[in-house]
Image 1: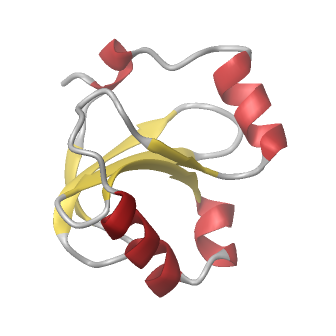
Image 2: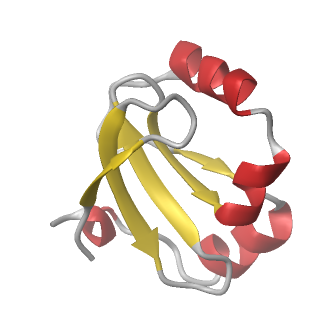
Length: 92
């Protein structure tokens, strides 16, 4: 799974995007402002992007193994408990 150059949907900063293949169309983003996070398309529509970007900015961890998961419990359990994400999933 490779990454593509993409503007962060929350803050607009140039970053990277990878799509996780599952039923929830989740995307993994990485940008300098928001850090690393996974979110589905439906969750992007539900949240106030300005507040979410501010939260991620202030909570941003500079750890290449850490990312925030933004979504509901059902999608988390379906994707990440049943089939855990490995760091190698995000390598080019």
